[in-house]
Length: 471
Image (cartoon, rainbow, N blue to C red; front, side, top):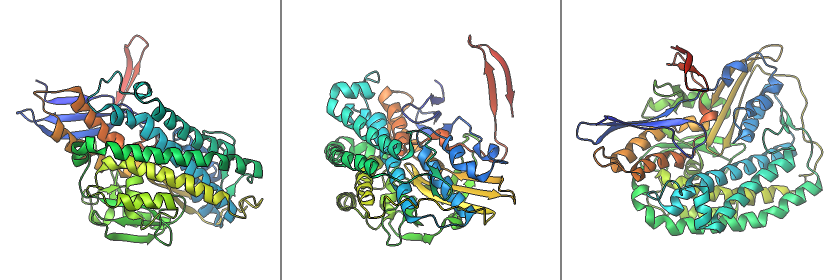
């Protein structure tokens, strides 16, 4: 019997990864690792580029969440310019970021995870997908498509296209919002709110079926990090970093983007190209962090919109809300918040102002931009020379913050469900499913540091290895 079980690739996630389960002599699980096997080099090949190109360049890191990188990058460039962008520009950026969060959450919940939730973890894998879900519950599948489409359409209306819009620029946005575009967006929102409320009701109704998964899906104490506004409310565009422990005690509060190096250190493990950030004062690995929608609900005092805040209060009554299984519910609550908040922002009196960009030359040699991406806190840190050319880039990606917790979660689930003497597909699907709760975006997140093992093969169409290099 093999002493290892390899799940390659992990399915229904964004990017390429695999899981290795290591078995003891008696067939029980001794350890498990989540390997991220792709490598991106954006931190290095951005060097030498003019800083004002960075938002558009950084958006190319990912086609799933380009807006998230546009936001964080533009904010880092604002810091280089040393300007306060016009309030209307900040409001419009907020709307686009919320639309990005909503459409990405819809993709994660309905397209990637709902097949497990609707059909069951042990269901036929040939049917456990969006098409099987469409056959079993056509309305649920259509609702997922509608919600993702709504978020994408809002991005397109604002930025001119759904993927890699060039509308976010250093100093603000490139053009103001028209009344016609505002009204088109507002017309979509009541239906999106109603559908999201229905999805929350449906998810809560199926929770009793998953009590065993809830108990072991990365269900352990960690720190949680996210942005809050000056009142302690949930924040996604701009605010202060807050870190709380598993009991809800505030560990760090009102930390600014420039403080991130005092909070976060990054480690490298030989089994993955994904860095492992951790809370620096507690060390590696006691400083294990989680970020993303679950963590944002756990760090916030309130949500500023009424429907989502009511759901937050109900969420706080859940005893096992530390379980990463509840990332699914947190995504739905954040989607509800996004639609409500977009509606509120678009009804403000100055949203159609034509003053949407501040112009300046660089006034600082270093800038940090932080915002909340769908998967959690996203950090862009740039340095420039006297000519405005990039000399240094550090990207701390949301998925990376969750790396230690994902690995611990894979081990926890494997030890509960997997035994080498009686394997089943459903057992292994649960190991994959705990990764899906985090909704990792691996193409965003792999920015290696140091000297890591590397093995590259050039393979012909017939499978012949023509050349290879290893480090």
